[in-house]
Image (tube, rainbow, N blue to C red):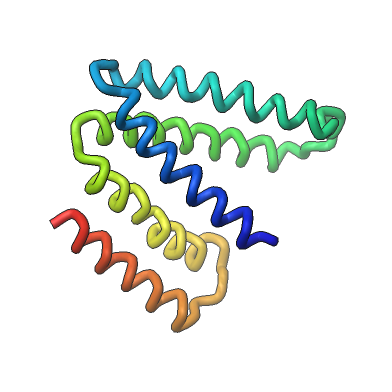
Length: 137
């Protein structure tokens, strides 16, 4: 089931890029990011209340709070830089560079999370890197 959710994520991420490129025409990228963030905020909290999980907020430990806040900050910076890049660059070049985050995540997962390094993940990372450079050159 994880694959279905991951595939849906990829489809909606693609739509995000296309819709954003069209939507930010003539608009400051920071303002566009703020508008997008408000929409995401309402959607996320809507799902929390729709699924009835709001009562679990008290069960979140300090370590989780810290890392969720750091993750949110990283997301915010990512979106600000992404929208700025998308505003001034071509989507067909900005998106592959943004998706290079897959390779950076693999490296961080090996170093920080101590996940297993396999030939498959190394080859996948190399191919993504090659593909990224082919797309932007």
